[in-house]
Length: 146
Image 1 (cartoon, rainbow, N blue to C red):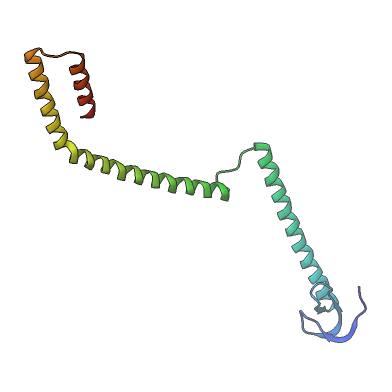
Image 2: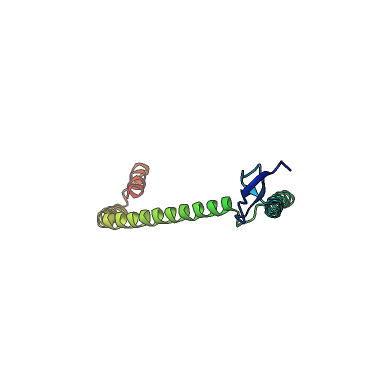
């Protein structure tokens, strides 16, 4: 220990007595409080050492299992990202379904009219039995377009 200063106040008990400086915090303590202060520092050191050991154990456990637990912050973040992405995809898909349905319903009368005209054309050709390869090809193209 360092040499004492004559009659200064102890940082802890505030007694005017012989004190000793702590090189870490620069406070002066009486011998009794200096020992308590050193014990507190030692306790804090052991707590840090314990936390370090727990961290090492966690790393070792993860290396053994080769899997990261589901409650790991990175995994939680990925799960949230996945959930939000799925919700956005589902919303976009639903919007597109509604768009397609509205589009189909909008074109249905036009398609029905074209189909009716096509049906009449087929019936007339069938009635006359007047068709050949070119007529059949034309009918096939019309049907695909409808």
